[in-house]
Image (cartoon, rainbow, N blue to C red; front, side):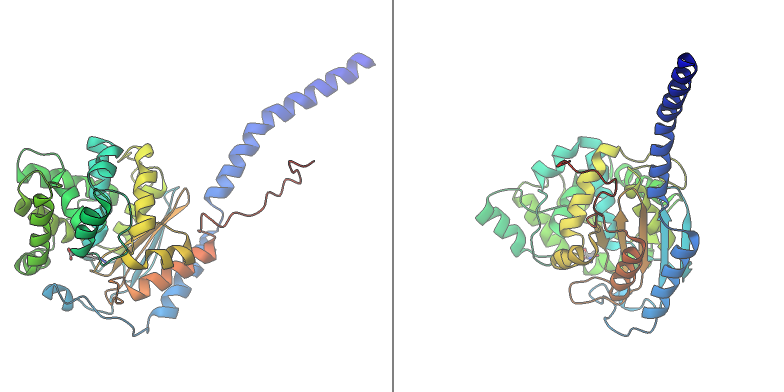
Length: 358
Ligand code: DON
């Protein structure tokens, strides 16, 4: 009798122990796909409809080719860390990636030289100034006395590009474009019209390149660094490319669509933290306050955002606000992410019923 009870208790305990990992896995799966296909599609479509006719902002025109891009292009894509792709609106049109490229060049240099290379050479602090501010460099140099900017503003970005490995310009470029393409999961190409237009008008960036050389941040030919930087900004992308790139960051550096590990998981948090403090330039704080998402904008009209462990999202829509960020993209991403519970800071109280005090 006693033996029978004992056996029954042992069997029950064993079943419990065996069930534990399974329930942990179930919980992890639930966290990954905490929303249904219908919920995601509804949130994408609602945001598309809500902002389709929004007439605020205007295309960047300091790069003449960007002023000619159709301001009505408006595409939204969301890619989950388990590789599901959701899209709505215009997902075939491409825009130039512009400053969003800075994220992936930063990642490339971290992969090649380690995380310290970025922090020690450039810095990982916000400037609070415009993306092409020269005053920010002078302030960091004179008042702060060292590498106190970041790889997402132009001076830091041109310096980061100068650090990409390669014996020749061609080798550096292939290295970089191949890396971007791995993130997108398809071979990306350059918009030659934008590249030429920006090359003809980028005297300010050339000056920034020389300034960074004069201060010995850039150690190689600054004109070549600015030229490669200009080409990297001219890479064409659609909303799905950008969302897949963002989802790769959300997924610890592994492209969730192709399954290829593109960068080391250990380097991802550093990239995301700089996106959080500087991804939308002087409006980064406001953005983070409302969404909690590391993000990055480009003057071509693209915006990516990352909900770590959950999804990457991107919108392309060329009209920009005064800080240089797409107006529709900011609103659409904030709505969608908030609808899907994407804010990583929005933790709910533990529901297990136990507390430390008990
Ligand atoms: O260097 C520039 O001015 C452009 N190629 C990139 C600037 C940019 O995208 C700023 N983003 N919001």
